Length: 217
Image 1 (cartoon, rainbow, N blue to C red):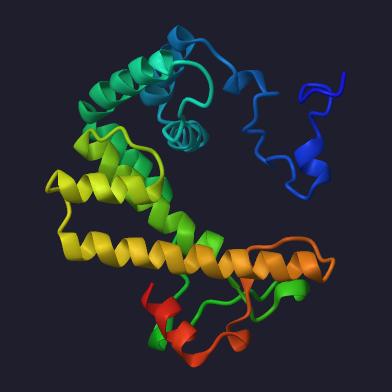
Image 2 (image 1 turned 30 degrees about the vertical axis):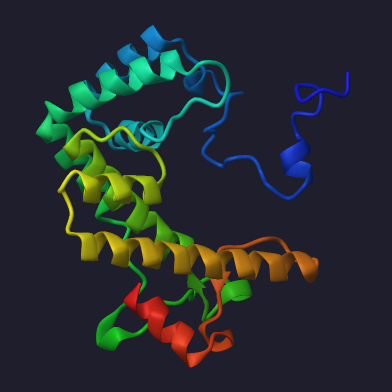
């Protein structure tokens, strides 16, 4: 009583909602043994269904959070070995990622929200910023057999392995830091105003320098 298992909705109650896609330990699909995960990866790679490719892409960000980490290390080694041998699978992963474009349109203008009245004229910096950036870096890490998780660590490893020019790695790391920083600032403002946390940023509330840097990022 009083433990985490008892208060499993503590994050939801604190304003961090459940994953809409069900990517949680409460979903049996995401709760497996090491052997079962290896079998699941083989199924995903064999069938190449869009939803399965998306699940595999999410799975690649796993990491150990408790214990010695040996099981996670073994699974990571297996993933790196198997995935690097299947360029067709990586090409299919790229295909679903290509739909997630950066938030810049014609004449270097921001692509802003038009449908949701709450955020009309604002930019979803997660969907049009950090998501395509993180996906691209993840894919490059998989191609290079790099086992790091987290965008910044992957960039550092790609740079160290000679798989990405130092200047490009630095630019992408700076872009990631800027976009996530703007998103966090907006969410802190939402919290202070008693509003639901969002990933939208109003370009009109940014300084001229911030707008310029965001477009570059």
